Image 1 (cartoon, rainbow, N blue to C red):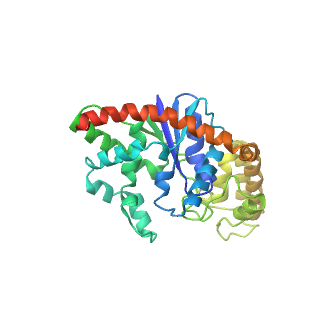
Image 2 (cartoon, one colour):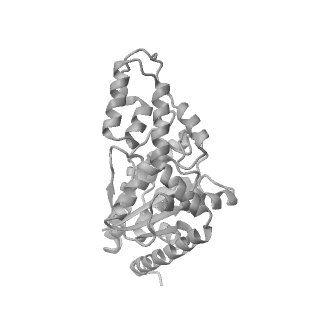
Image 3 (cartoon, rainbow, N blue to C red):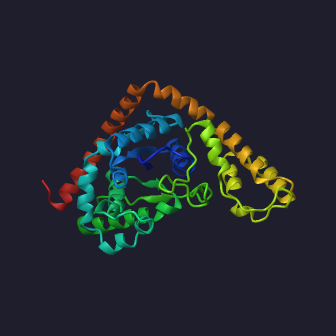
Length: 321
């Protein structure tokens, strides 16, 4: 089985990235042939500063390696190191119906946020399909918010295969409902674009301050707490604390006399403890950026070999060269 995961190089990695995409991908990498890439082409839809983009790419590379990615087992590369992806996206555009892209939730959501639409934003799902299909991935771990994009990729692959023959593997989604969508400090899905994220590798003082800003209801300390299924600090705690610890916290909240301030402090402590080894590893890697670049170069070589095999079949199928 071959799996593929991409993380956009649009900012600092946060715990939503880790629990929603990174950890599932790293777990799959232990039992599958894994391809993991840094989506710098995709990041161009939101980033226009070239230096900022370069810094983000390195930030994401450091983060994945610090969180346990093994470059000997996993093909780890920059998206832009596979120019074949852009070629494939153009070819796939010719079998992609316009209404399919017009109905994509992500595009509508970005427009609703006031982001000026452009072709890159509109055609984002086609490029995502090219990312997946270029390496013939069987399975793609995605959050609920990206499930539609994967369905689009499946539909595009199916349309191509029906028109030109069986060239592409049809990818299957790998969705884990318990961590597929991680809430941000304001209750919406945690996202860099919403500015509601808790960074993995940020300054400790800033991380604690961010956690203390999490939105909660106005129930007083002494009151028994209700509606805990929507309590953001508790939801986040359950991602890192043991089931026993989470149950004990929930019992204290239901009993009353235990405030959200204390809950947030316990959340900060358990998050810092959980990510402490990753933070230490990242600091070590940051002192050896030549190694990180070498990992990306070797990953690009391996990914290009797969991309070339796929594109030879695609070009032959459509009548190019």
